[in-house]
Length: 323
Ligand code: MEV
Image (cartoon, rainbow, N blue to C red; front, side, top):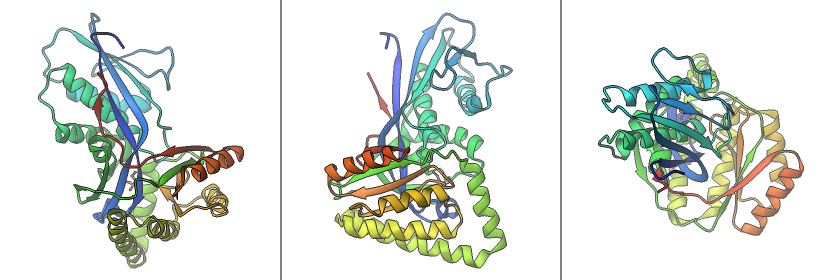
């Protein structure tokens, strides 16, 4: 990190309750996790801004102008870049490097965290007047490009951090007494597209409106109940509600045989509860444990079976300046 560089990081997330139904105005609960994306901006004497993403495209530096071509994965970030660079009279160009510890296409909010860290860094670079609300809103522009019809929960939790309940574009911070519980995030390594899964649920809702509405209503009831239990710290009850939410997501047909296999493995352990998180169709399962040693054993077991597992606290910090 050079003396003149600006560095912001932003967290990934898991949805604890309410994915998919949140797209239709129902509430969802999300928490920031301890995997983060990072954006470093330095001043350059080049004529045009540039972008490098060593995790995705090692050895490539992309020039960013309206007309420049970038790989499809980087289009949303180019879009953000152009929004933020518009009307900038600054002669010095930004040179941007994006890195991330959040596995992409796995339901952990990797694209939103990258967008949030990029937005915050460029706003500071350009000396823009910025605050968390502005960062959240601008980052949402790239989320719309990637996901088509997103609820806005991913960029919101990545910006504000902690734990939130999110409904119809509005969030309220949650307080939790379950800080001594540990979340194991298991990556099935089955990549999936949030956009495609949201569209799948949309089609199902068009074909079976009553059935899908009934599922959404049950998920909503679980989410409100979970809010109470998170606030009072009853992790056993939270685990039970996670199991219930998972069943309903399977009814929405966003499960996957590999996810069912992971659930089968987790159910043999001392888990309090487990469910898929995010759009499903692959991606991750989250499981709750009340002891770190058990969570650790389970991550080892899961890794032996060929999956990836991480232990995370819940309610991690949102976007932050790393200097
Ligand atoms: C977001 O991570 C998961 C979905 O609820 C889509 C959304 O909220 O935009 C499936």
